[in-house]
Image 1 (tube, one colour):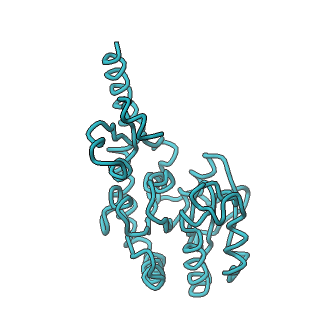
Image 2 (image 1 turned 90 degrees about the vertical axis):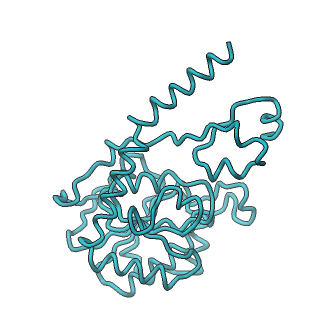
Length: 259
């Protein structure tokens, strides 16, 4: 269907160059590549003067190291299995780690034939039980405001996704000034510059994930500039104040061309 539309002269829109380049090269010049942005005001926070941390009525002490994972659904594509492996390693290594997970349990990606419409969280936990269930909070599907509150208190945000179109959660984590630890893949590198706006590790190297995560948690102030640079990048390039006017201009241009 997509190729038929392209043959019929539609103007295709993708969020990222990586997504566009999945299509045959004969059509790529016709694409509008434009990320629709995030509401950076919702995620703005001052990490040097942190407010008391409370999520859904549950208080979190200032000494706690908060590690987060956010996805629309907890599935294999977004690397929930990888996150659980890392979470267990961190909970074994440190007594002060709290892992907060946001996302529904049922898999909705149709490409995941094995787990589609099944509870992937239940499957992963049956294979990798939580080392300390008291330090692993599953919030389920929550309102966008709660997602923002989770990211604003996160000391380390984990993005272990397999190669796929970038999840909005990663951009939102950057907007919130999180230190991001992500899979080293082409779609991620379009947004994260390793050592400048985040940290990238080989996707299938559990030791590298653990070593990098532990380094961050052991010295948060030293790694805070990564989150600050990430937040500045999103404000300058991907905030709604920047992206929506540009999108409006594109829509005006397309409508004039159709007349």
